[in-house]
Amino acid sequence: MAFCLWIVTDIVYGIKMWELSASAWADRAKALFIIVIIFYISDFSFNSIAKYFFGKTEPRKSVYTLLEYFFTTIFTALLLNISLVIIILYVNRDDIKIQEFILINIAAIPIFMLYYLSIRNKIVYDKFISNKILLHKIEQDRIETELQVLKAQYHPHFLFNALNTIYFQIDPKNSEAIESVELLSNLLRYQLYNMDKEVDIQLEIDYITNYIKFQKLRVSKKSVISYSIDSNLKGIKIYPLLFMPLLENSFKHMGGKYTIELDMRLSNRSILFSLSNSISDNNINSKKGGIGLENLKKRLEILYPKRYKLTIDRDSSRYSTKLIIDLR
Image 1 (cartoon, rainbow, N blue to C red):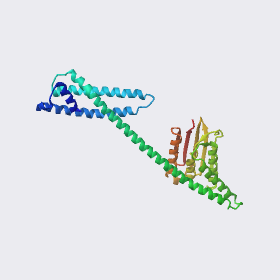
Image 2: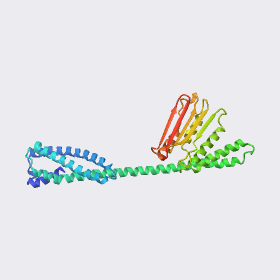
Image 3: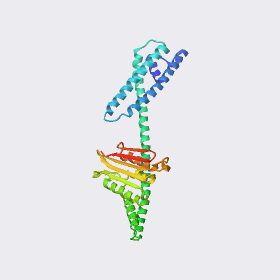
């Protein structure tokens, strides 16, 4: 670019490059050094400007585009003219001529603006490639998730069919075994057919109560399990099985005085689910939740982003969780 500008100015002033003295070439080498510095300054500045304005979106995108090119043009003009003054006064040691400023603005500014466009286009291209890679990864994750869901569904289907077979083999007089199989079948049926869509809150409540009934059949007789469910929880749609990881953990880690307390209610279009259980001395330092709790948080982020609050508290004798889901 520097050589192109020198050729143009030499033609204008009638200078023949091959007739220049050694000192004149030395001055041009100094000027070239200044131009290289200006190039790196412009490169850094152009990248910063392009990245800043590239992130601006509708509804004022056209306004930001005009500001972007206006600001870039003004910045380029100032940078070039300041560098020209430095070269004239401190390198060429000559008088400032207005025609040189006109020439550099006419010839150099378009070149710098083309360079800016190339930087901007590279940023757009890199963003396009990045989005394409991201979309490809999302598609791979979706396929992997679908495969995992299909694998997960295979086992409940197998168990569900096996339970039906066992059900008809049980002695009709064994009422407890029949009740256990019926409850477990209902739990599996709900998991199989109500995973990917919103359901009526009553179905979720029925599942929770059936799960508690099923767990009561196996836990110690000294266990005290109390639960309160608000009667106003009606006509509400919710994604299923969001409360189950918390309830499962309570039964899994229950100890000490063997108590579980559950409260589920509606408050200002939000569901408040509170749960606490006693813990034994052996479980005080144990890590509770694990992968089930992590998966719950991921589901909540997907299904109710910024519309939920999950808190976990623990002391020496009790473990408490509270989940609030905003339905608005």
